[in-house]
Image (cartoon, one colour):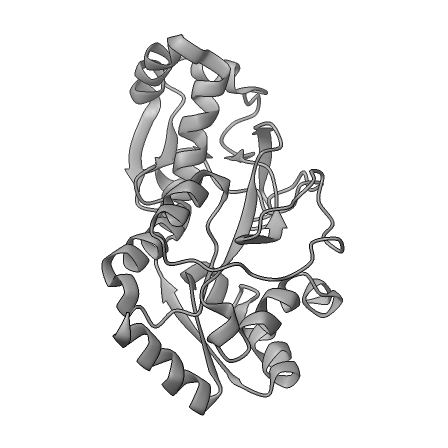
Length: 264
């Protein structure tokens, strides 16, 4: 406990906020750089992003560091990792009213604050696949010469999401469904960005996170479209750690649901 408190005191003196998140968030094409600029203008502090390769990796690092972690905020976990994150005992209430959140569900969690939501979906290469499956069952039951790329559920939240999706659709028959999917699977990657590199060359279908609930087109690259989606259960919470003693901690949670962030 002492190292954590000492770290927080130093951070407060420097007016510095440390946020652990996944690397796609902080990339040049992600929202991180613009959010950093807008947040620092509002907060009057320095926002430090610590980029980790996947959302699962973010949680693993928090577990590894324990109370010595320098993180003030953990950003980018989804609903399926909330219980595991809570079990670390490292999270504090965010202290932010949720009335202004725009969500398809009610939200009253005191620890996790959503900053985005979306469906799980597959995308496919329209040049390689003229008649794609239109549901998870059609994908599972398609001929084995249809090849797909999946993400590892141990490291990837989209990978974990598709595992739970299969279980929700197939119930006790999920092992059989996975056996059929395995015959179609070219590879299982650590995370979405690793899959994206291989989709054009190795398989016409890949399992990503679909970041906008209302969108139907996966924008990068433009020839690939989202073809099927899971029930609306995906949400990406922001985890607030020691907010009351961290510089900008409460501001960061408020900013996550503010009109300034949404405009970015």
